[in-house]
Image 1: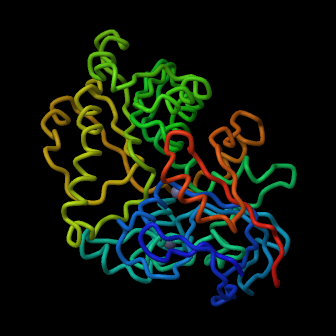
Image 2: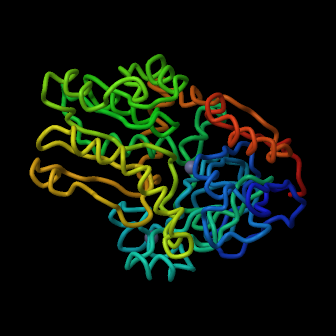
Image 3: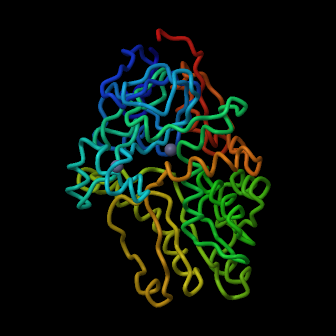
Length: 395
Ligand SMILES: [Zn+2]
Ligand SMILES: [Zn+2]
């Protein structure tokens, strides 16, 4: 089959590789119909994520048709269309039973690196390095989905791929970021970063009852999308003071909650970069921390800071005193995608949201290298890339 393979820094190639097969009784094999390139895939592309190996198949945002099932998979049938969460969860462990799916204890066979740094490892991820489980990704004609009883969500036939594909990651990630704000009627939510996750956080904040959403970025295209599609008021931080504007816009109070979706919706996996690539890691942390510091400073007393983005290491000059003094609540972490699949599918079905609004580029999987290069080199116009397959294979 064809698959987009990581061949080294800035080197993605579509290669012929062996098709996946059932390894465990709870596996399913999907024929991929659509897959997206995520902002966090660019971290792999740029070579920031350790434990990638030449030939690794990329992709954690994908959907497709079930073509083969292990004997223990009872809830799927051959021919079902499904979307698959990027976090792999067993459904049985202490954490899965508490709906803390991204904290699953059973799906990262290579947990030791994360355990060394954090004390514990999170769930395994598709297409995101050996440290995160070494699972082949879905930017391919076929993919093996472990724990297929738990993750895949069946999609009704009347919904096109483009409306549901982002249930795999960025829509739930933006939604959880807004949900973590515990929004009350009349609330003002400020969102730093208007990338795809920021855009979904903006829409989700309104869906959850926010009265005002204020979006902060410096890329005009992204701010325009936040205003036109999301209905947000906007602040361009190249032109205006963020703190001063937010204070003025909220009558001196400050936003009720602040979402830090700066940078990319990456997946918390730059961790041992701290050891191997100290300078790079420090640069990323420092860069991102600026928005977080700003959010902590401007958030109203008793408000909430929600962090959907990734922080991999240690934070420098983190204003903990301000957070304490104002009694802020912090909520963060990897998305519990499985928890959100059904409720968010319902929002799509009832027409309350059409997630396809963020797609700017469409490629065939065979042109994945061009897809990555376009996404990397034209960040202002290229907002979200979707790749489709021709859909013929050997199964
Ligand atoms: Zn993603
Ligand atoms: Zn589990």
